[in-house]
Image (cartoon, rainbow, N blue to C red; front, side, top):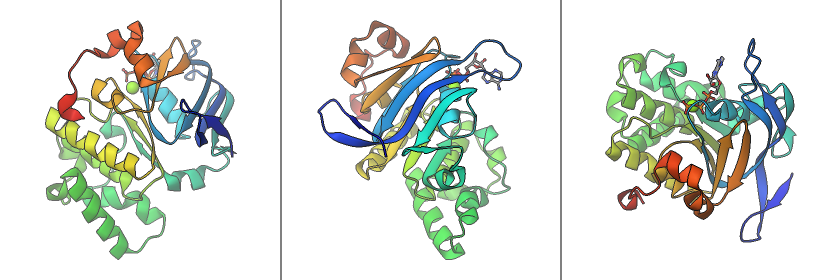
Length: 253
Ligand SMILES: Nc1ncnc2c1ncn2[C@@H]1O[C@H](COP(=O)(O)OP(=O)(O)OP(=O)(O)O)[C@@H](O)[C@H]1O
Ligand SMILES: [Mg+2]
């Protein structure tokens, strides 16, 4: 297992590592990622960047859902594509567009989908779905067709479905975008709860309130990444301009 030293000098295990990752979409000549080198340890890492800079693409590669043309993606030192079944069991992924992720006829079955595939008993599954749907405030939606929900409700359902199997690593693409501030606060408080349970969270976002609680910030620009601390991000003119970092997040903290 790889290690790296964080800002205060303590050793943390590396959850995810990208080594010289190059990626372009089939049929296109331009690369979205041009030699990304990145180490992600436990706690919250946020990925920021302009629209179209490649945040979603980077998250999909980290989830093993897109394969880079060149380079390595390592999960606790293992090649993610060789260990994909194992990685699926300990990773939860929330897509940017919930419609890309919802395909069951009821919210209950949507939440049950991953954990059923892992072979847990229906009793345990029901208990986990009750816990997680209470946490997300979506218990009243369990019998509904997920495709007929509002955008915000769909997003809460996809976040819930990524948490039911209690993953160690959670990748979230814009979890608070287009949500009311009240729902966004609920998501941020759940994220804090996950962090207090030592989970690794990687979040692509434009939400300054998520950045304010991060351990490190990955800035994606021109196909490469730069990792910085939150303080450095606040002092970086590009990031500050991108996210509007003068916003008051005290109520979300
Ligand atoms: N399936 C695809 N086929 C071809 N090009 C794609 C595909 N998905 C994304 N792209 C292109 O790749 C680039 C990166 O897109 P990506 O969605 O990763 O950006 P992003 O940083 O997540 O943007 P946003 O902030 O708008 O969500 C963009 O130029 C986009 O047009
Ligand atoms: Mg995106």
